Picture 1 (tube, helix red, strand yellow):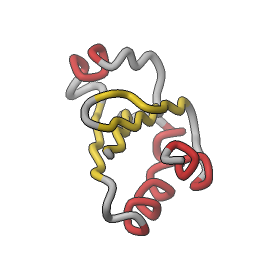
Picture 2 (tube, rainbow, N blue to C red):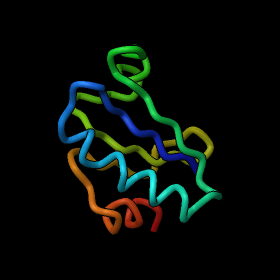
Picture 3 (cartoon, helix red, strand yellow):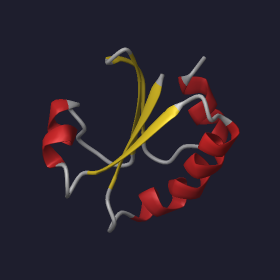
Length: 82
C-alpha cells in the first residue's frame, strides 16, 4: 500500500503534520510514502481531486482505499490502513 501526502511549503497545518507522518513511516517501513507538493505538482493534486491540504490518501494497486483531510494524529494515520 502507498500513502500519498499532499502538502505545500507555505501550509502551516502541513508543517504540523509532517513530523507525525515521518515518525509513522519510520515505524512502518513496508508502506510506500509519496510526498506531493501541490504547488510543484498541481496536476497530481487535480488527478486525485485534492481540494485542501494537508490531505492523505491511501492507495492499494492504484485504487484509493481511504482519505483524510486536515491535520491528523498518528492514530488517524494508522486508521487509514485498517
